[in-house]
Image (cartoon, rainbow, N blue to C red; front, side, top):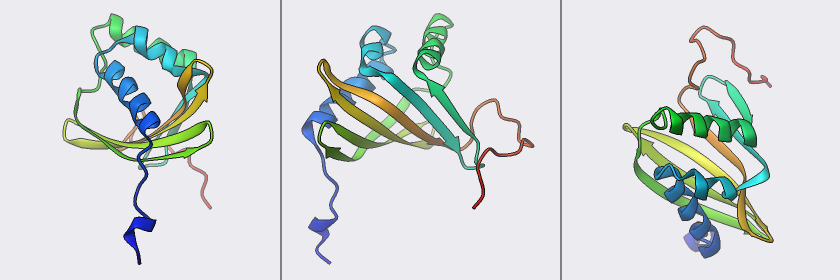
Length: 145
């Protein structure tokens, strides 16, 4: 097999947009971060146990504002970030990111859309070990096949 056929893509525009987003996240810079979210943004999180949460833009921004007011994000700062691949399809694209926080790796897929004002995040899909606040004995939300 020719490995160049399966090599990841690295679109420079998507990488630049992703770096601007991550810089704003890491600096807790809501003034720079908020305009990067599309009006129909949703943060979709799920965990190993099958629990999921679908957080719409205003609710998600409300969390960010509350954490900022209360002294910062409850999760530790990222120790390492790796952009693993991008894919672009016209005015839309996806960026795969791994971030290490407190020794734990989180996997993220960011779906972007190019609008008249620039690239905007439409979806952030986040996989984590366990969603916070979900009791260990709760029934998962995943549908079984």
